[in-house]
Length: 432
Image 1: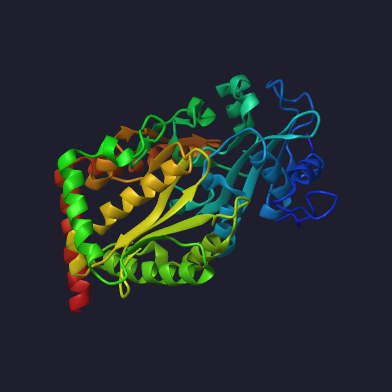
Image 2: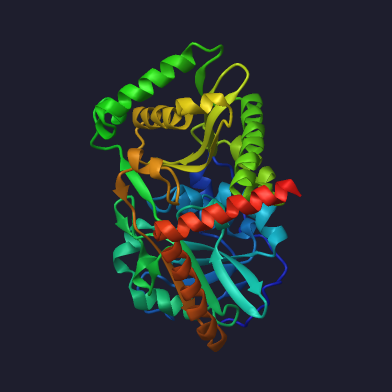
């Protein structure tokens, strides 16, 4: 095994070659297979039981792992859109770094030097406890990692556990949350590890078996009629339209409106506003302006609006498989009685279906309206894996705390009580 190096090892280039561009996947692949050693090379060829994995490395900066990441993104890949390099690098630059999170990117290579998987973890200290978890925090609804599909049948629980335990000199506990059991037709390899149900549930809508309009398949005739009547009333007002923002001016205008509206909603509910935390607005703005190879924004903003008012807004992240809602809000004014959020969902789903997206979700969490549009359950799980004696003490505490929170949210009476308490506290805070 290579000599141990500190997590604070100075960064060095992760590849030798010309500058990479998103439009040149072949160059990215050639550069990726020439990745230099990361902050620590964990194995030599032949050290692992997994037959295809010849070498493991850990990278402590996003830039050093980028060539490997890009190469995986341009191959046959199991991953969610939340594991895109552009999204997580923007998140770490604006949010993660200031929160004390260091990239801890575990990459497995073939004998030819090609990346086979990348686990996009972040390393953080909780007191004396050294923890890794998926990058993206609450802004990443679904976590799978990045896996080259041909290796999936070869991966076993023993392989993943063996790799995890090679990290023990730097990590006490792995806290891996919000993982789907399956994604885009494939099983999540991390489901081979011990796990428990996640705090929050998720549901989805399959767009593969629908006719010309998915809304006609999922909503009852009476509900569709009510929504059409409401939209007719909104159409009588000046400037009513559905917009999928593409211009920089529209993106900034709508994002600014979202941040203001969301702050009011969170305050009314007595909730901490995650979007007001340091760097979050800057992260979202960068991601909304970032363009993918197909020309679309990395985070797309969909909205219903009038000439003088944003009625409803959803921020979504999309790949060829799934369109997933990252954030949303709606008007607090009188036009809220026309259910603009539900109307907007209908437009988004029809738009996704028209462009060939095969699945849709409204994010993680419980809300009654979600079941109207996304009736298919999508089980999520969390893993709390101890790698050291200190981690063995902490893992049951983490698991119990997450289980208790899940049980509270599943109990309507208890969860209703929590929400009432939050609103009362918010009202008292405003009064003072």
